Structure formats: C-alpha cells, structure tokens
Length: 217
Image 1: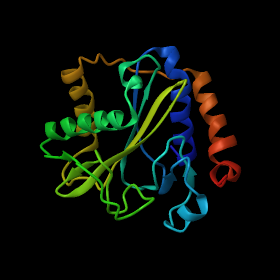
Image 2: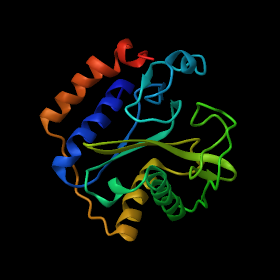
Image 3: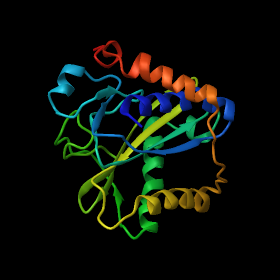
C-alpha cells in the first residue's frame, strides 16, 4: 500500500478493534520509498532530516522512520485486554520480548536495549536507540511507536536493516508461532469488511494525504 493508506488502515484497525474484542496483528509493505514521523513531531524539522517522500504523520508517537525495504507490522489491542492495561513502558517491552522470541526461532540472537543511546534524536533508526528497543550485534534492529485512547491501543513497528538470509515469510510465520507457543494465542484470519476498507480509503485521502494533517505543526 501507499504510505497514506498504510497509516489510514492502522487507524481504522484501532477504531474497530473494540468491536472485535481481540487484538489484531497486521503485516504490511510499501508501494515505494516513504517516511513516517511521530504524531507530535514538527514537520519542518523532520522534513530536513530525510529526502524520502511522501512524508506522512503517523497516528502513533515516536520519531522519524524511513520505509523502503523494511518490514512493518501493527498490533491493535481492544480496551479491557491485559495488554491495553499495561503502562506504556511495559507495553513496549512486551512487544519487543515477542520479537526477541521471534528472531530466536529463526536463528538470530537479539537483545532488548537496557538503556538509551541518543545518537540520532528525533529519528527511530538514526543510529541510537531507546530502552527496550531490539538490538542485533550492537545495532538497533526493531523499534515501535504507540498510541492509547478509549478505542484501544495501537502499536506500529518496523524491522530494519534486514538481517541477511532471512525471508519475510519465515519472519511472519515465526511471529504467529511465537505468540501461539508463549501466550496460547489462537489465530483467525481477519477479512476486512467493505465498510472498513472504504473508511481507510477515506482517511487516506482526507487526512493522511493532506498537508493540513501532515504539516499541522
């Protein structure tokens, strides 16, 4: 999908997850190079940090994330779920513990960052890392951003740079298998209703493609 539609689809999942009553995991890619940045960041400052366009404001916080060959995912959690009730730091830790288990399944030894390295302020993959980011061989491999409101909890994550020799399909399968093994998750494929798809397309056109939204601060 194009960057505006990817952000719109994640927002639509957040808006609908309470009605489904269970978390939703989404994997997605990009039709071309793009960049997303945190909801509370200043557009002019971020625009000076990357030549990638389009530059789209995410529905979650965090910093600048380039999207070209990265693997991206989102998790939408309904209110009342134990994950929704967790504090932001614990929620972030929980997400990357899951990913650590995932990469262990495909033969990569990763670790959660014990503290921060602010080498690239404002950039999620600018050389530094935050506490509980996922590290591989001393470099950041995975980061995420969150948003929690009365509708639910949305987590948007990115894996980059990609480990050599690892296929995306193997990583996605490991994501589902690790959740099943460690958390007794039972997976059901979600077939989005036409109304959800229509709403996502509307959000993409009216909001995430709009300078009024992307350059609002």
